[in-house]
Image (cartoon, rainbow, N blue to C red):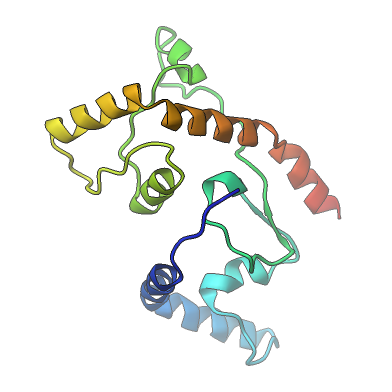
Length: 172
């Protein structure tokens, strides 16, 4: 089960995002009014997934913050299968099977999810120093609970067939 983000923090993040998206929101409202939708246009932050008949989001519930207000037209479908990038040499392809630890400096929203679900460590900076990285790696190697959480999430992702789900949504 996904955990909840504190509501005040979620509201603050949403307000900050909405303020930055205000020009796009205004333009979307203008275009929707021109098409006859009227004044009752959803906010852009919600409208991008509430206006379509069906919305497929490339994630799973086990990686997201729990929200009880997710509309019925929104479906968390997993991730699309990826082929090895053309730049990956044959000698590095074995590590692409994810049996080795992956170290990434993710975007803050993903880092918050990783930390919240105890899937890894949020270093809280885009430019961590060597000592912070070393300490995080040592913790990851020692902490069996983190590995168990990662394994659990991998099973959640493996339980999804996103291509089949997209086909089902398109044909419904």
